[in-house]
Length: 498
Image (cartoon, rainbow, N blue to C red; front, side, top):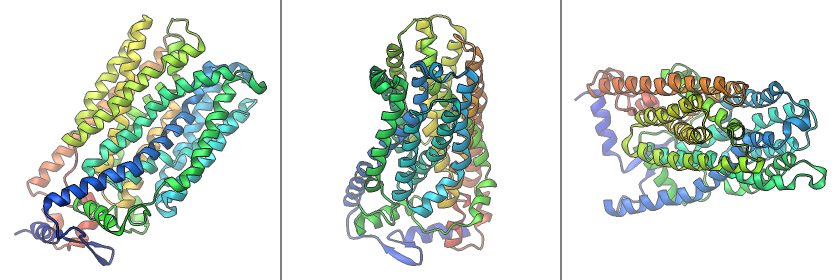
């Protein structure tokens, strides 16, 4: 029997008692039948879903609404009132992504050290304040400053929540939860269009233009929700107050059975940063994520403008309303793909198929002058972008083991993707066809998203084949079970999700 087989056997023998830190964590359900255990497990997961997911979705809906509502404000008169050129408007979009990307890789470490129940509501309060301040900007400099601080304070939410959820759920459960969470971004597009259309009716009230009211009211809503979040956001499994001691043991044990160290206490060390930087999956994941994240922001920031310039000669309010359906369709497909990818464990294949839909959409936007065709193409574009965001993040989280290493990798992947938002802010110039903008998006999706997903899938399948054939077993020689656990996704019996 090889060293790896011995370790695997010894691990199976002690499934009833898993080690946490220096002590033994007993199985509270050891006396129950397997059927009874399964029933308790389903009830536990349902409890986690009800307590964690809805509120986190609300937070991300508000975050995405706040970062993209400038597109709605643009068609409501922002450029004229502040005397902005197209270049200045694009610079105001870009500066958000600079501060967002600079601080994003640090945020998962801060989340772990400061506790989610403190970190998430605090950054939310400050980004709501920044959003409200945008409603009182009277020149280009003020708008730049407000967008800079909005990016800085929002930086911790998306990577933080994905990292946070990956510390609660098994790898086979995480995808659909991440998809539901990210579908809030698509809902924000729908909700943002409806809300902007309603708020626009306040134009002139209190001496303020309609676009100012969009920023002010949406910012104040975020501040109110942030205050409530101090009671609604919970900490990691080992500290969460809503869990009983038995439920806490069940959550930690099911993660251990899933070969996750997410529930363990790790102290931060620079070795986790180095481990992430040396992992090829992080760098290829950054390439794939930029292939969907840049198109995401380009689509979200400019969809109202694309519709307005499509040739239908629509009013401001009708433009806002027409932006709703593509987002709604994307939200549905995002959740469906999350469910399918969890069941099949074929996340790469899901990325490849879905991105092909978006590629067709942007080809149509380039090729056609027909307003109806262009509007239909926006549906295909949204359907080809949004599901790939959550699927790619889940893919990376599934294949990186170790609490801090996963946090570092997700921070770099998401941070690099968002840095490409600078590109998305500076590619739409020549109305009404915006050939350069659509062409750049198409190139990103073909080269980085579609091509990168094919490459990642191929390489992971090759590595899994080597592990199944025992070609990595030498890595386990002479190692204790604790030493193997510390290897994370590098241990020979860890199989990657392809």
